[in-house]
Structures are given as structure tokens and as C-alpha cells.
Amino acid sequence: MRHLIDISDLSVLEIDELIDTANDIIQNPESYREKCKYKKIATLFFEPSTRTRLSFEAAMLELGGSVLGFSEAASSSAAKGESISDTVRVVSNYADIIAMRHFKEGAPMAASLKSCVPIINAGDGGHNHPTQTLTDLLTIKREMSRTDNLTIGLCGDLKFGRTVHSLINAMIRYDNIKFVFISPPELKLPDYIKNDVLDKKQIPYEEFTSVEDAISKLDILYMTRVQKERFFNEADYERLKDSCILNCEKLKLAKDNMIILHPLPRVNEITTDVDDDPRACYFKQAMYGKYIRMALILKLLEVE
Image (cartoon, rainbow, N blue to C red; front, side):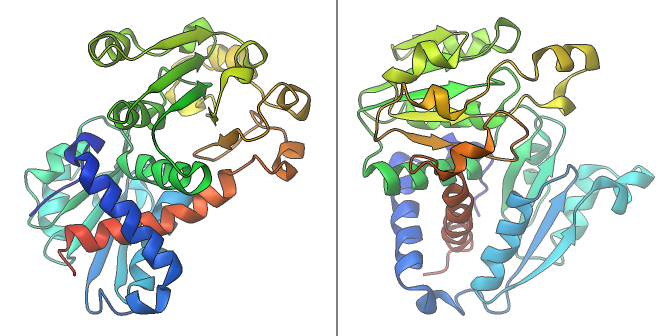
């Protein structure tokens, strides 16, 4: 039995195989309609979600399986004080696989130690979001036709952005990857990632405080929102929430074949007029999330 807690739990070969499976599902959906017949996924979401939860549920339904679970901590026994370990011990009697999102870093890891079925980390605090990273990699492969020889700009909340942290840990395993980090100083990438991940592996990167100064260098611009729920002080959030905004005027400085990604939800960091630009791929990215999660469910359930 395997779990997916961190993107590093998968080898590059396994990631590429998942991408291949997802592409095959896109091309041949009817071949997968009953692959998980009589299988159940439990979506245990202790933190709000739209795309991740619904894409997991849609993924299992399109594989012929069924879904149970809850969408907020208040509707579970966690509101009565039940521990994560006890919740998972019980739910693993009812489901074949569990997707868990939690506001505490490390909660899915703790759950995996007590679960009788595979656990998928669907986001834990500001730490990791491996299935979003798989979504990002599928999108990059489909839209850029490669996952190597890329300059990737990461913009917005780089301090608390679990999608950013996971994507960095995935992309450093591909050849000739360069990073450009764009954020206000208060939300810059944590030093432990720069020191322990990038510097240790001699991955080149630059840091900027404005989109305009960096955008011309990029093959991919990965936008993120400033996350209000990660701030202890609302005044700090209000001061920083508009610090990195992408609009059509700034896009004039970008390459014609650059792509724009965003894990969503968007607040105001990408203006709506950008949606019509052919480089905007974030809604397709959300669609691809369903297919890569279908591939992951098949892998962890060991379905051929």
C-alpha cells in the first residue's frame, strides 16, 4: 500500500507514467468508465476547497466508483474533538482510498500512519499540495510539450504557497530548469527552500519584487493569490494583497508562447481581461486536474 504525501514520494518515471495515463484517459475516456467499479473514495476536507475536492469526486465517479466524505471540519466529528488518527481509522473501514485536506502541516502524514487504505494529501496548511503539482506538470507537458529547459516564474505568496513549494520540489528533478521568484519581501520564498533545495542542488534562481521586471524572461508564469487565511494580522494582508497583479498591459512584455498558470481560486491577482489571452491556461489547468487525479487513483489502487 502506498500513500502520496509529498511529491517526492513519486519518482520522475512514476510522474511521467501518470502524465501518460492522464493523456490516455483524455484520448480514450470510455476505456476507463468502469475501472473503479465498486470502489469508494472518501474526501476528508477539513479546510474549504472547490476544485480539489470536486475534481477528486469527479475523477472517481468517471472511473465508475462512488464518493463519500465531508467538505468542512464543522460537519465532521472533528468539531467534537475527534483526533485525525481516530477519524482515519474509522473512515478507512468505509472507503478504498482517502483524499485529505487539512489546515495543519503534517496532518495527512499523521493520518497515513493509522490508515488501512491509501492516503492522498490534498493540501496541508502552507506545506504541500502534491496533486496540484501533478496537475501543473500535466498542464506544462500538454501546453509546452516538455518539462525540461524551462524558466519558470513564481509570483505572489511564495512564503505560504504550498503549491509553489510542491512545484519547486518537482521541477528541480528535470533538466535545465531556472526559477524566477516575484513577490514583496514579506512573502518571499522561505530561506530553507532556497538553502536546502535550490542552493544544495545548484539550481539557478533570481528574485524580483515586480512582475514587469521579470516577465520577459519567462516560459511559464505561475501566479498565486495572497492567502488571507494564512495571515495572523489582517492589516498585513490588506497591505500586501495587491502587491502582485497581472494585467494585459504587463503581458505585452512577455513572450508570445509563454503560458500563465494559477492553482485558483483567483481573487484579483489576474485581471479578468487576461482570460481571453491565448497564453492564459489556468482554466484548462483546472480541467486537467481531474484527469491526473484519475490516473493517481488508478495507480494507488493498483488498477491496471
